Image (cartoon, rainbow, N blue to C red; front, top):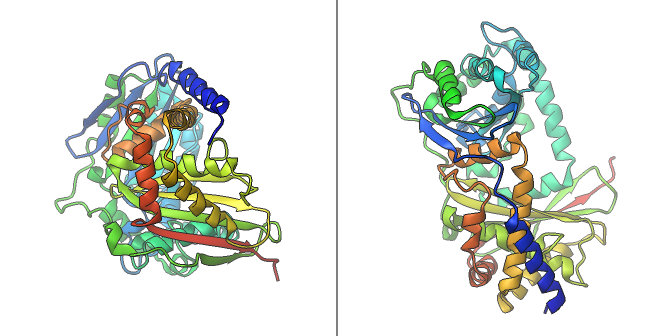
Length: 443
């Protein structure tokens, strides 16, 4: 049991955090939809000279069809490589002249594009981003250059033990589904893609009713809405329905029981003898997502988790917890590194910790401490315009409310009994995959 003194400190920390004003957004986010089906939200941050723009397109790797493996990732790169009115480098140059940098990433469910500019450049920046999204040239010569860039990214990813372990968990959770493949693609798929394949992928998935745009900063909602209408209002919605989100099988349909032994993965970089470990849980619908997050923190967060408090834990390199949402289901992956002997001892520590939560459910003080940790991490995420817009944009893309970005309201309803019940499900009914990646010396 935790000493009363420590519990009191947790309660004090929780009270101090809850006394901090909510995220400095100033006013409630404005949410709306253009006539063509494009959804948007604006998070006001009065007084900010900057505005962050966040675009989510339902065009992630899980939407790839036959002969399209890697198309989502390669197209995300090619979006930057020119339009009929802007040659190679023109999109980047236009935004850099406004003081912004267009960044992007490919997830399983979405392609994600984002930048931050001064408020006076919002309309112009939206015009540049819109041009890039709607009218990529997909030039064959530029595509060969960018293919080499993507293949270099894949090589770096393959040599990252934490990434390898997390990818193996996803493969174990969703074997036989497009969700099993890493969003970055694979060497064979990237190598075989043609400009025509990318055009088909783009034509099918880049459409206004598959796009969500979020803005956060000093640009007021009326001005932001006008800029959106001017830049994106004439984007015609195709007559055929948008592709459906990737289906996620029910928990009982994936793996009836966890595998007896974790998946093994070998990587060829990193300190010799180091072990990366990951455990994944495909558990909940959106309603219990916060409970999953709080349970994962209670189990493995290096600051407040019970693994960190156990004197016998083999984990020496830190633990991270990440929750993703796919088609309304949350997937939590606990990942970390251990400098101790090669083996699966960290995964055993996770299972032992979960069983301890079942046997001794968290009391009110422990729940308050975990909630304080969750809200503190979230407050840090939302401190900037870029952090606020990412949270708002993702919620909007997932069809979730954007009026509780700080998670205060939702997390206040989570109880210790719910957390313990979820831990029991992780250990028994849950679909679980585990992986251990060992580093090997390069040949």
